[in-house]
Image 1 (tube, rainbow, N blue to C red):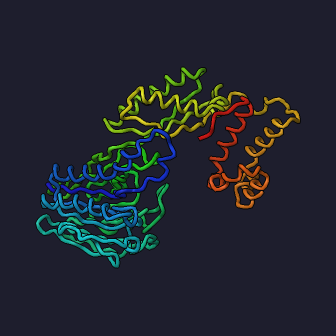
Image 2 (cartoon, one colour; image 1 turned 180 degrees about the vertical axis):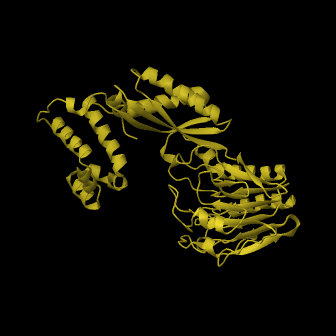
Image 3 (tube, rainbow, N blue to C red; image 1 turned 90 degrees about the vertical axis):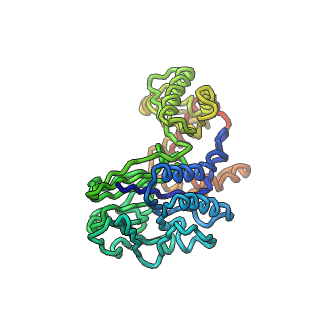
Length: 424
């Protein structure tokens, strides 16, 4: 039986911008997680005695801030060389040829496919042909898969491609192609990269098309286990891919339905139970969680008006569950008030009522909201603000319509309660 490893999107030493904004985040551990995950990958390849390893693009996040990033990668590849494991690599949009101004001599076991055209490498002892092309620049809009060499009928053909296929949410549609384009090549295996979510595009045991996902989640949009694939090839060339987690830190988005909650104490206990369940699923890893409150709840206004209090209470609950393996990244409030809008009393003409009317108008008039979110709309708003508030203009101009709706809900809740915690 032949075994090989397929991984992609390592993003070694990714800067992980924005972590410092959140109190209590294990920033140092998260910044080292990519290196630990790569070490886990090498350990797995050695332990499973794979014949070769494939890295399908985005080893790095662009040019290294210092040479230590490259040296660490070289050291890990040298460990594979000691065990006679060759590594076949293509670059992707993040580490394309025109983005990397630094270079290091890789160990002899590393083969980097060129960026000017697709090429092939044959492993005669196991009757395998690998075909691939690196990115010449960070944006590739051509269907490069069409130019890959024809399949060798006497060999197991493996294609390496960094692609968004026909579109995947959250990923640019680079090197676009369809699954049918890949199947027409008659390759037995397509080792894809670029999409950070694990996906089996084709499960036919004689024609696998696989995204392994990235090896370490970097933020709360990259949820769940992250790792690589070990592919087992039988003597008749039927194949089976087996996922192996490599991540050392895991991200979770924990939704808490608050419809039955009537007090902050009840909510804290409910959140604590959700955190315990999520930590069990992390299987001994550090878990970084975003708490999302949902449902129609009588505490809706209080959530918004005392957001910091609730966030800190949940962080205390996380410390109680496991101070070493659990951290709260953020609190997100998606609840709804129990009172219907049409039951609201007719407002008077005092300042607070006028503000309520303006908030309600923005919430219901999407065209007006979109007009406000244009550059001209922001400029009109900032001109009406006191001078001491204009320093926030850069931060506010990055806000999208969904986040602005949340801010409107918070403003309304503060007006209803007449009080607000200090903002995040």
